[in-house]
Image (tube, rainbow, N blue to C red):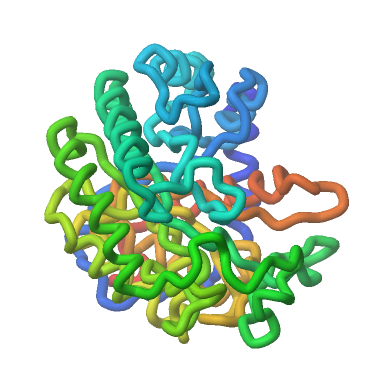
Length: 380
């Protein structure tokens, strides 16, 4: 057995031993479950270094996403040559590059965002930035890259801090009741430079963007995958902002703004779980809703312990959501893209979370193998 194969099998075997033994599913589609799925193990790379990319292959990662190298840092899109170069680096190391992230419209805090015009509704600057996004779409099509991931964020990712986790690890957590804006780990002003942004204002900005980009995605057949807002906040807002993409109803409205097979979600299961009062029961029907409509273009396969307004980001095998049941639902709805780990746990010996990701890779790979090799589980 080759060393690479041995490592991949070993990680999968270790992760399989941690899988829950009780496997139940809510009436899966028997015909869908009987067929092998096309679900892949993916990752958003942290480097384009050859050794790093090869290490991902060691752990059975097949598909990757991330930012290409853009020579001109002032340019908001990659050229076709730059995209092809990134694609070829990944291919040389045994990986498929199929999800691009642009250098703007990230999960960023608007006060530190270098290109905020779209989310601030600043004209004519937002039209310039939307044109750059459309150029990105066109160049992805020319380079053969099928999807682009983006965010529509003003507040960035909100967390209260870190708490002790398994072993010597720590988990990021959110407790709305104890975290008014002035109590965030790095205290911020009561309002961002966006000021008060109510639901109507936020929807106008989203619609303005989609009306000008989705037709281009349709023409060039590139999927636009929007990440939900993490976490949701009450309708009255937080730091003056109503996060309309922080609820399931908001995501349903979002996908209906433009009827297109190229307009959908980077479905962050962790973030969506954070929207729910009982994620352990509710998440599966949410996956079914968006998955059955082919609106899930990529999955961040992350678990939480808790519920809306009070949760911690935990290892995949110890959270409120049964991942065995979740992957059965993804297979049931015919999901065929990547499951990617997200937001790793930290420890003193793993400050960047890379070892946490290795555990995630093995765990997810074992789930994929299990759901394909034992299609009767949970259904017969």
